[in-house]
Image (cartoon, rainbow, N blue to C red; front, top):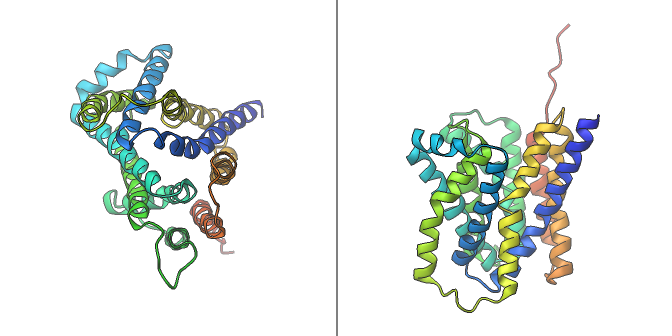
Length: 297
């Protein structure tokens, strides 16, 4: 019971921090381009994760892992943080955060589709139900409830938000190919992506006129979206005697996020967004259901 209480606290901290990042994204994008944002946030995240790696006495594993599979970690770095966050932040730039954030929650549904395609895993009946509910929710959010008119608020923004879910799902599928320490993998991925990001950002953007508010916001993103929040969640999952006790906490995050977006940056929260998000969450919960087979006498 004591372990579960500690796990619950770790999980709650992670969920509350993740609930704030959509607001931080929109604030940062007022001062930086998506490319600058990915670069600066990745620098912060790399520094934090490297420090954690040293504290946990895992720094000796970095070179060992890189020597074993250098091309694998280069690919991982290209996906996350480089391509995934570029696509995600561009989606946030084109869409209200209250729409982009719920769409991003369909990554778990995308994961089941990609697992069937690339890992040859069987798609269960409840996975199809989850897909139907989730993407119907996406349609409601994207059209702001105008289902018959099919008038999308921003087609490119919606497309990029959905592409980001498949990139994130693909990243985790690749993770299954390598049973390495999570912190070590992240440090290598971010470290290998940083030179490309830094060079690209200096070639295609101007860093000279960014105010302190932009630097503060992007540091928050690097610290809590890409950095220590993941470690809090990982710690919670490892501490809990039953992960089901804490895993469903993640579903309160998007609703808290909508409240923060409305309160802090004044975004309009449409009824269609809440309905669509409810359908997406319902689909994700359906995926987690366990049906007991009736035993024959």
